[in-house]
Length: 433
Image (cartoon, rainbow, N blue to C red; front, side, top):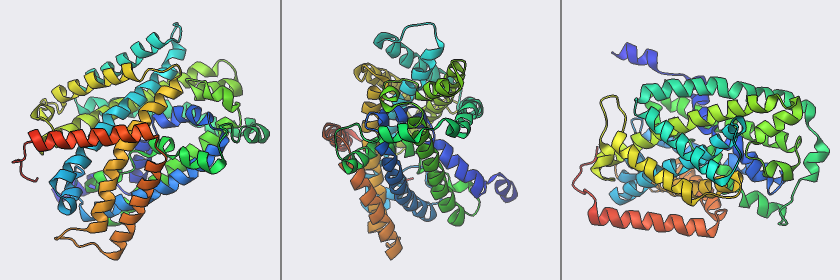
């Protein structure tokens, strides 16, 4: 038994790429258009955002060492902060995952529409996003194995053409064009750089996955920190490189209005024939990401229900492992969000959704920082624990500061209403796992 388990465990290199792949999704394909509205100065936002992600990643790496079998935020939050905070961290993480799924659907259809013989309009965009959401729900009903196979296919065939752009694009890079679009926002450079952090950080959601799968990593004490920090740095370099490259090939004003910035850049580099090729690749990768994160949503919802944090209906799982009933309710809610966030431009709709998703997940990350800072009776905090916890809290503070005030108020209201519902109706007799 132990031999089999040892064979299946992965080393630091594969774990690093796994963490990076979990972060490189819809943000990679659509954030350049969102950031182009402010200018190329947002390259500084990528640098700062990567540093904040490293601070949070270091905290989660330490948590993984302390809780090698964790499967939910409740596992590390409850011992330090109690069951109510365990509920909040688990529930806000779950909420952020399925709200963020809408942003992935926006990105995927933004590229897919280029391939379809239809006009880009609000009605068409809404219909396409909803159809993608329900299609990935249908695939999830077939079970985790089907989703894993589909996602693997999407990763391989979705990233190869885009990788070609990142390699060949530098021969088309125009430094003067990049400089001309430095800051088109009308605000100071520091205000833009720090004010874009919440948007940029969407690309780093998933940095905690190294900690969540510590049990399948060989020598986790050593390799989980390597994989987490290495994956974050790798993803940060890819994001920064692609954003700088694209803004040096296409003017930021033109890039900001595009629903498919990578396809636009490919057409500028290679000609019209490259546009559908890149659009198909990006749509495929984003669709695979949507299917994978919907699986995460179903599984995290089921675990939360089993702990008494969500209604029992979310904990019902089919024989093939699909969380069908709970995921159906989530998909209905996602359909409503697609309707209420519809905007004149893809980048504006994308930005509105990711701001809320990032704010909710950052509130869950705050609980991780507090858990390290305060420790627990069974595991008192060491000096290094406190430093890592404080670093995570500072990172969360900067992300909250950069969040639009209406989004922040909305997230706080959601958290308070969730806690009130839990205190009033929650199954408080459910024992700790």
